[in-house]
Amino acid sequence: MEDPAVVVQKFGGTSVSDRERRARAAEIVRRSIEEGLRPVVVVSAPGRLGDAYATDTLLRLGREEGGSIPTRESDLLVACGEIISAVLMAANLRSVGITSQVLTGSQAGIETDGTYGDAKVLRVDPEPLRAVIAEGAVPVVAGFQGSTPSGELATLGRGGSDTSAAAIGAALGAQFVDIFTDVDGVKTADPRVVPEARTITELDYDELFQLAEAGAKVVHPRAVEIARQARVPLRVRSTFADDHGTLVGGMRLVDLWQARRPDRSIVGVTDRTDIGLVLVETPQDDSRSAIEASIFESLAKQGVSADMISVSPGRVAFIVDRAKLPLAGTTLDGLGLAHHLRDDVAKVAIVGSAIQGLPGVMATLTAGLLGAGVQILSTSDSHSSIACLVPATSREAAVRALHRQFNLS
Image (cartoon, rainbow, N blue to C red; front, side):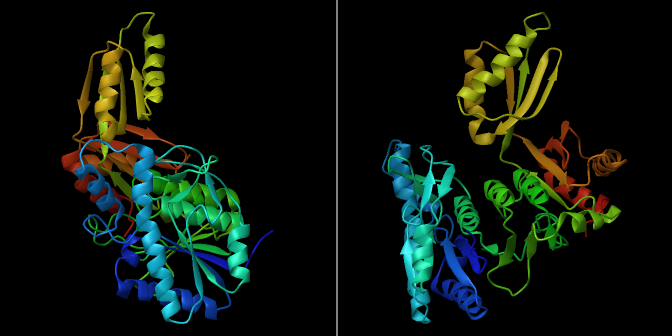
């Protein structure tokens, strides 16, 4: 069953951080009602680190009590931010004459697995939300959270409110899932690094997924994957401007491929600095394959995900999240393998679904980086992205060089 008049509107932390901004969000909700749509609002915790109820502020509060907080209790702590935000947003809606009802993630029908701090959405029961809509009220859902099969509260990890919105949109068969943020859409690069970066008006799901995976922070990749599977269009828009933003998944496939001109082959440049490089020495005898397999098996057991993997005689190299770099080192110590850890690297990537099979892309990329004096430590590619590992000190130069090299302005 689909609800084609439903639009899911997710407002990020900066969009609900104070009364004035919540009033702006309420105006967006009011306009959608006037257009004949039935909005379902999803909110993040208000603000960022330093704001009273932001997720990072709550986490810091927990750490200041001393010792470590069990993940189950940490989830209970940080989920308060979204609940507070939902209550305040609902009050703001009522102040402008819009009937609303607050729901926690659990009350909204979001069911998750039991992984505290990074739970996966198993399903969304749409009936609680449909019941609120049928009563003529706007559901205001606390994002970032759901309920495990045993009834425990679990949070969905960083960017989890995006995931909440996408999962709700998929369950309701929504017309759109709108991700409202403080930028006017997905950019060709981080505008703090490339001031001339432009807003991309249309993307397919895979392009946005790759941009998000490679470091663009506008939408969480898990949310993109849910929307792609359900074929629910996403719109990335600004709470503070009336621009159309970026439409994702709104084009028919034939139209998308017809739009693939040479100047559309690359859609954006992304960068990540929250990574570390691991270099492992391996033997060059018959035991090499077994040892290489044991490296990744042991890392997986510790919850360490490896990327940009390069295997060569005598050496295995890969990157991990920087926060997991010490754990990767400890794991390799346990295997008795000599290794070197580096936290002075960055990952820079170009993204575009027409990269595969397009002649000259790698040549253009390397020419741009080398021309800017950027050392390429390693590369990896997929059907829609090419990533380069570079020294962290060269990150901004690399992003600017590639943005210029591929004429993205």
